[in-house]
Length: 247
Image (tube, rainbow, N blue to C red; front, side, top):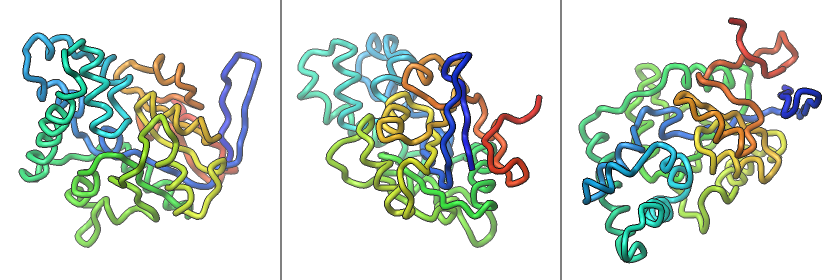
């Protein structure tokens, strides 16, 4: 497969691809992490000041404790370093409650993208720093026998890694477990820090921007930006060129 994109009107970048690495929370599974981070704050004023832009950068992407600390710093909360573990734990309880209630929902367009890659015989990996990612995917049924958890050739979700995004370690681990080189992988993500992580090691990065946040993803270096997860076409008839669907 090839992916092509024009970072400037007169330039085109093309690289050969053969594997997909997909984020889980907020990308495959409709878990409202931004709301969870906001609701876990104690002070109503802090909740009001926790905006989408703050969540997108720098809270989304890094491990939970790092995200908690980044949020508290951005909000100017006193003793942020001491408060971060408490805040991170409060945020963690929210997805656990949703999972226990069996209320997880997948994005249909994301499932179609994963299925399209598998249909081509591509190796597909799930990569999320969220500890609950696998529990979420087990609740999403693909058929009677299989859940979304079973759809991947590699799964590096919830691993205890020294550094989170924008460090590319999680994506490099996914590529290794898929037996692919980083440059042959394209990452599907909706967080600027994750886009930065993928691009840091030469991976193509498909930025998903359903909330009019394309500018942040573009600034992070996204190779291509779409508003829907399956707004691209992956097929052999076009020699594997990653292209947008016709209007």
